[in-house]
Image 1 (cartoon, rainbow over the protein chains, first blue to last red):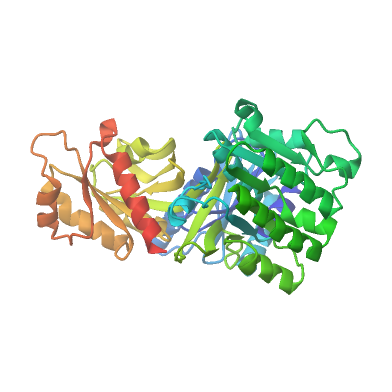
Image 2 (cartoon, helix red, strand yellow):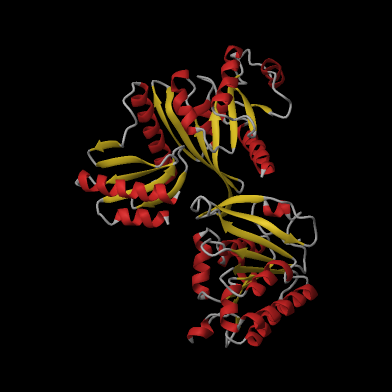
Length: 115
Length: 390
């Protein structure tokens, strides 16, 4: 079922990889269109999201809604999906962030209900 | 004994399948369980014995390719790798195999072929069924159940071991129960952990009539090439600053990445190990206190813990113990690594035990992570402890 959520995400185009993991960095499901190791991908994403949460909540600025990383070759967006899981996507450089955020929020809601 | 070739399973079965006995891999739908039969087949044949593979749902040429995918070269095994072709007859194709079932929908025809193959074998071997469920679909449930009894008897006569891959599609309750509990000498369940939305796959022994059945469940992962590996999703490596945690993770792993800045880990080390039938993902934590929130975050759901200590730096041992608390490791299998044994002033494991006042059930093992001394011994020790827990 988690696989379905990811393949739906993949349909919006320009998504090169997507994955669902536990907050502590264990892979639950991945849909990879690029070569690479999904286990490491999610472990690092979980660390990033966790570190971001600690950084902002330390200064009483609340919990971040998402972490967005931009490089010349693409974007990485990582978002919490309920208290136990997170979802992360890797996109092509030309991908529009707006649509991705909307779809990712929807996916996160679904994942939250599934877990 | 005929070994199954599945890591850990042979230990639990006290060596494998006794000659003349039968085993069914009872596979829940949705799990890639047919690899179990394939691995048993290849393991037996590569050990110089004979193997008969009853192909009922795949073209024999494709089957050889499937074995190839796992790095199992069937050509090298020559005529010890035998296929009973119960597929080509279905689609009216020609077959190059020695044993061909002309009408795979007729169970008697199939029995004839299998018996012939068993008789021809030059010594005890293994007969593996690619998919018992397919045979059942083609020949009928009751006919197949009767036939299995006949095949098993015949195997007993010739001292072969029978191995069935059976996918538990919704057949009648009676049939499923019969296969699970009665018809074979042993049954291994192969399933997925679905409570948490398929997180992993496991196998466990349901029945084995030649021994007391251990209540064990083992997580596994299928890797290509390689086959079935016992899988440990998370092993934590923690310890004080500059103890050699990252070095340890890298020494242990086939591939590993680290997030290092200015020579120290700031996020985590992530490594992957594939060693003697076991595969594990390894998470190394930072050691400095300012990263404690991340350590806490990453240490959930670990199945075992390495505490790495710098044997020359006794002042940091307290911090090491504190890190076990932060990672909530107490209660999990823990192995303490007395690292940097090559440096002058290194304390022995026993001296460290005294200083830490660690109970004797926590192993403390000497290691030199920089040249991989002792790291694999420590891994084996921890894996054994993790396997005992279930």
